[in-house]
Amino acid sequence: MRYMMTYDLMETFRNTNQWLGATARTMASYPAWAMLPNPGMQWMAAWGEVTERTFERMVAKPDWGIRTFTHEDGKDHLVDVKTIVERPFGDLIHFDVVGREEQPRKILLVAPMSGHYATLLRSTVKSLIVNCEVYVTDWHNARDIPVSAGKFDVEDYTLYLMEFMRELGPDTNVVAVCQPVPLTLAATAYLAELDPDAQPRTLTLIGGPVDPDATPTDVTDFGARVTMGQLEETMIQRVGFKYKGVGRMVYPGLLQLASFISMNGERHASAFSEQIQNVMRGDASDHDPHNRFYDEYLAVMDMPAEFYLSTVDRIFKKREIAKNEFVVAGHKVNFGAITKVAVKTVEGEKDDISAPGQCLAALNLCTGLPDDMKASHVEPGAGHYGIFAGKSWRNNIRPLVLDFIDSNAGDRNKGKKSKPANTNAA
Image (tube, rainbow, N blue to C red; front, side, top):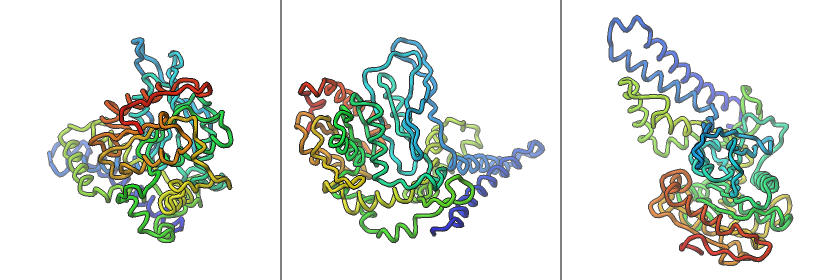
C-alpha cells in the first residue's frame, strides 16, 4: 500500500462523495420541484446536505472558535491565538486574552498527535483560560509538510516538548493528555538531567499509556498482536500529488478515520440516519449537537509514518519508557532525575483506551521524587474523553488539577515542601 496511487485513490473516493452530496443537494433543491411536493426529493436534498458536509470536513482543520471571553471583571475580552514557537511539525500557541492582566498560572497543554487536531481540546482550553494563561502544542498535518523537513518520530516529539518547555520557563505547569503522556514525562526527565533550570513546576498526566501492560485494553492487545511489518505494509502510504508533503510516508487520516468508525459502526450509521431526518424536518442547524461533534470527529490529520511506527514499537511493544530504557538523541533518559517537579496522574475508572494503572506507572518511575510531590486521582465512572473534556473534567478533575498546581506554586529552590492536592495522593 506504500504508493501515492493508494493515497490518491482514497482522496478521490472522498472528493467524489463530497461532489455527489453537493450535486444531490443542489438538484433536489431546484425551485421547480416545489410545485410537486415529493418526500423523495426532500430526502435527497437532506441526504446531499449531510453527505457533502461529512466528506468536506474530513480534510478541513477545525477552527478553535474561541473568540471572546467574559472575565471575572464582567468585561468581554477578545481572545487572540498567537504563535510563540513555529516549527515544521508543530507550533507552540498562546491563547492571549486581550486587555486582561497576566494570570499567575501558566499552563502548557500538550495535545495528542493521534489522528485528530489539537482543537479536540477546545473545551479543555475554554475551561482553563478562565483564570490561567494557556499554551497549547498545535501539531501540523503531515500531508502539508514537505519531505525536505525531514523525519519526525517519538524522539523528535520529545525534543519539541523540551524546546517548548524551555521557551515558557520554569514557572510552567504542564498538562499532558492521552498519547503524549509518556513522552512528556520523558521530556521532563531529560530536562532534569541536561537543563534543570528549565524544568516545569508541575506535571499533570491525564490518561496516558506510560506502561501499556499495567492494565491491558483492546488498544494494547492490538499493539501486541500485530507485527511491525504488518503495520507498515497495511497502514503506511505516501502522500499523493495534491498536497505539499507529496511523497512523505504517513499513516493517512482517512485510514485512521475508517478504523475509528468501524469500532462503533452501528452507532455512527444511526446518528447519520437521524441527522438526515432532522434536516428534512428543518430541525438541524450548523451548530446542532450532531454537527458540533462530527465536525471535530471527522477532521483527521495524517501522522508521520516514523512517529506512528516508533510509538507502537517503542512505547507499546518494547515498553521502553515503562522499563526506564528510553533513549533520546543517543542519551538514555533517567526518570529518577525528576526531583523537583511535582507529578500528578489522572485516570478514568471506565477508560477503555488507557485503563487505570497505565498512567499511574509514571509515579513509580519517578524514584527521585519525594512522596509529598506525587499525587494520583481515579475519576469514578469516567471514560477516556470525560477525564479531559467532559463533565467529569469540568466538575471534578479541573478543580483538583488547579488545586494541585496552586499547592506546588512555592519556590522549589528554597526546599519548600507542598502538601498533596487531594486525598487520593500517592
